[in-house]
Image (tube, rainbow over all chains, first blue to last red; front, side):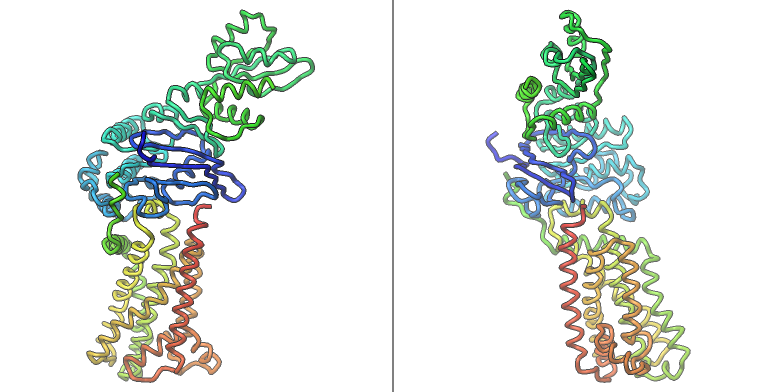
Length: 326
Length: 258
């Protein structure tokens, strides 16, 4: 894509007191992309969005929005964001809140159109304090779109919604994206990112761990943990077996070593263990949840010389294997 | 890229939008307004009207009405701006509004407009009680001056309110505003004329913005001369409050998200 990126994040660091929320983060989002920012709670996703929307300043690095400083109102004329659902002014009516927001844009949707996209048209005269949680959530997303922004930032858009409402909201977002908009959303639900995003950025402890197609990131997070006890020194061998992704934690007990292998294909890995007559015992296979997978990956990275640079998946595997054999 | 040619909406339109909806929000919680409206008028009714010596003297009655009018403006500005801003800052809607394509000016200006508007509303009951039940009287020229004086009274206290509201959490702001409004009002001669003060209190009083404002206002509507330093004292405090408000606003930009 030749045009300048819609969002440009370069070497950004942001701390809150002693907590490092973002550490040397790079991210480009180009026009028309639908990017999911995936990571456990506290990973730094919301901090990243707040930098892009101009709410906060990075301690180091550069954030650009449509080529300008997001803290300058002129850079935000084509930006739409959501309030947290609990944050709507309770005494204002739904229609009035929509007017307040749409008044800031030069070519907004009409009240009726914005409300109709989210099935809220019959609630126009209701005070927002009287809406249900799901209605507030839908109104919050409607507010992000009412100004016809070319970039929409959504922070956990469907948290607290029931399944049906979630699907309605997803469809509305897909429709809006199909009209040509760029969407950057955060979620800690893998399912949500799977349903919406084409490109996934995995972030944890303030670092970008992976940035790639949905498929490649799913492979990365769809890991199993295989625990087994081996004679000392056998770990490097098993790490190169088919199905193995990388080595996790290792603890030595006497001559033996308890090894955790992160496996992208646990079945193939176990089959290979057996075929090669590897002298293992106490085999356990555990599903790694998204959060566990993140934790395992970040822990492994922290042990080595992980730089926090965005790792492409293949490069990442290679680096990891080198770490292990070193 | 069409955005490069588009700017934010004109500031006056956004100011009007924020002013209008802030006004609506305030009206919908009427008890907040009624408290501000009722207290000074009730004070006039209970403490001034029964004292016929005061109520039947055009001079004293007018001064009393003006003193309580200044108090009404002060408490309206301090409570709605001091406590109000601190409360707004704690709502998640506040950071959201800051992501909209507009600088801080429209929202702040909208708030100031509301402070001034509610200041006018807050003097209405006092003027009515004073007009109907006391000998207080204004010439048409004085009446026009009073309209401008409400504005002059509102500005320093709006600024002080903003300084407190941007500096403190909502609960702390309410407490601090209360701790400031009543001593300032009393020592400034808004409840009791300064002629009744002991000498030491009178001296302290002359350094206060409330006293300066009270004397200037009384001079305007009754012709009783204010003390010489009244205007410099008022302007000085207005400048101090402006600086405090700006500093608090800046500090808030950096600290809010900890």
